[in-house]
Image 1 (tube, rainbow, N blue to C red):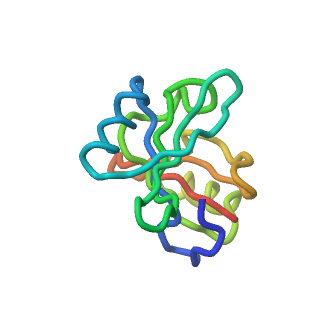
Image 2 (cartoon, rainbow, N blue to C red; image 1 turned 120 degrees about the vertical axis):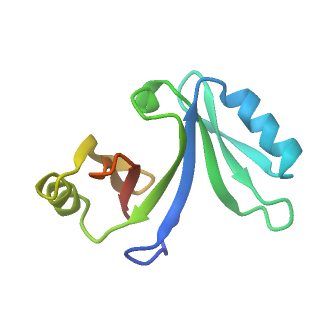
Length: 125
């Protein structure tokens, strides 16, 4: 998760899937990403890294544990100044808070659904 992203920028992208190992291997073969395991207490999720710089650019996560209720597919993390205020504004403007604000990677996040039905995470470093 990027701690240097500016408010309003996409700071990270990941996905939750029932077949994280298969999806990890797919992107390794198709895109050339390298991987780093992230210990989730009994299993590993994966940081996907560029082969040249080794920079983490995305995550591939098992749809279990804290990710069990997240929708399948890529999920963008948009940097916000105040995740609690953004979650409240979401509900006030016709959206839904799918995952209430909680800690993540040195900050906090929540997952929201906009009035059109699209889902995104909001992240406060």
